[in-house]
Image (cartoon, rainbow, N blue to C red; front, side, top):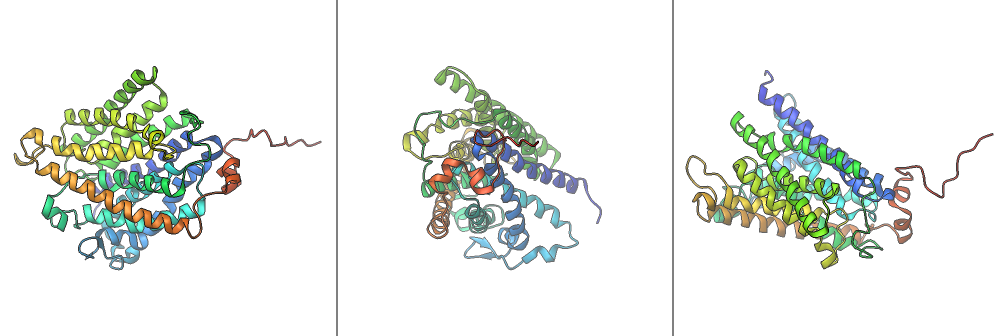
Length: 417
């Protein structure tokens, strides 16, 4: 079989999405403290290793195999080791799907920076990808419970989630919130607002650039036509651009000055919000979604101080909140298909809004319960959290015996005669 232009594009898109996880590592690494920068980067990189193995062995089968448990998950034994796809072009799409699973679980890590043991995190990656990500991906994209023929889809209608508003961002954002409550806050959380400042803002900006670059593959890899690809590309530019500006405006009005970290966070919030909607709203709709995401996420990152949960790098405020905004907004802004349906603003009635809300609520409940069970099981057996002494020392040194920068005041110079 000859390689088609579509196959080449999916290969390129998969490489772009895979690049997003190192981009996320740099984004999170720059936001973290200097004594936790390497650990933060490693939590993303190990997600590539663990999920890459899980996906080949049983993960892909769980997202696409014959339905089990009434549409909750595909059969993991149906395609064990991908042996049935050797010599098939199917492996191109299978590889593309793996990159989504990888970055979804890596997103969670930012919430628990500075105090999480690396070994238990690695175990969590494997278990959570298996029991939470893969079933939800099957339910939404594999013909399961939330699809048009699934039980929830038949009752409430099929929700639109082109590239991962529910499967990726609401999923990861709520999982982050649950883990934060299980692991607990850092010892010095809440001493003063703004106390935990990013240690390397240029690294944050580099990571943001890599994420935005890779996101064109994230959203555009599954485009079915040149026309759809063009719409996705423009929307993936427009929404984060609008979100960056609206985030900066909120900062300016609230704090007196716009910041670089605010610009980066606004871009990510806009990218998150347009993910489920990228192929189903107009460019003006994308601007509206980005505007709302920038404002909503900028305001939401302060919730952790009001409600007392230590979401270290604002995974909840950005990914959960912007993911909900983008998913629900489709109920208002979705374009009609062949003159039928669409969101409320296009005369489509409340049907699409009901479907979007149902998928959102189901994802929150499913992810919340399963993540709590996994997190509590690990916390109460091998333990998730480093000791108070190791937290004070820094997880780079306690977990990896490394430092991102070699200017520690207690290091002695290497003097030889």
